[in-house]
Length: 283
Image 1: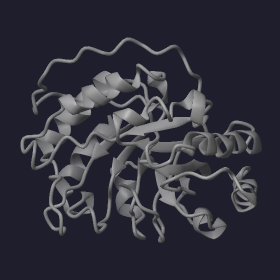
Image 2 (image 1 turned 120 degrees about the vertical axis):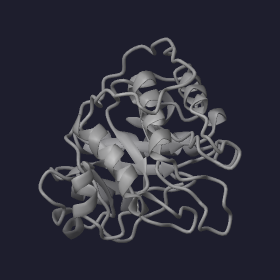
Image 3 (image 1 turned 90 degrees about the horizontal axis):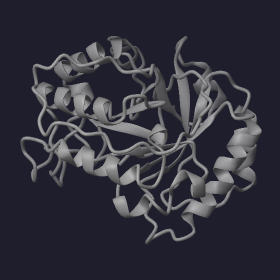
Image 4 (image 1 turned 60 degrees about the vertical axis):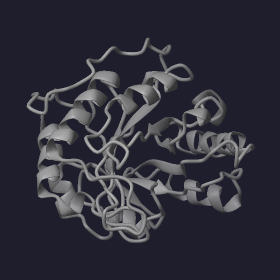
């Protein structure tokens, strides 16, 4: 559900080399997690957030280290120390790398503040039958231009897209999964949706490629309310489930900080949810 952020949004990460082990067997997790559970600390320091709309210090204070940005060199240079950019070069239906894409990546390929590139948000193979091949040309160019120091990233929302866009075909470094367990259909949230998507994904690609996407938005203030902003207990349960299923991600992704037409309220509206994430990231 991410959309291009036109104003400063956050990105910080250390460059990582992605190693793809054989897919592990699906992790077994208890059906419920007590809200009072003491969460284990994340094993990554790469915490990505989108839709910052000019906010810098507040997301940084929560512990986010990768900010969503455009491709402006000046915008990236203005990021605080320790924050890196995941540059939005995304398309809903990916097209092959063209001269403009290659020029942008070449301009940023040696920039130490660029972690990588967000290449597509929720593409669907039914709508984009050539999307995976097109992504492969983009992701391969990123890998070559940066000598493997920058990542390529997409988010998939439907299980039926996992096979078509698996990294061995799309060549992307990392794949975000966004179950979004809290909704009108699941008013108390359904962490089992996380299990379903992770278990489906590891049937097609390695667990090390998965980026957990944490739901930090609702839609009660939008024209089409369906998703609910999690409570602090529900957020804790989701974090525990993600940690059990994907214990060593290269990055995690929180959607999202500020409002969009399709997401309101969001993390900016809840100091309590910010506190849960701050404690989790700090641990």
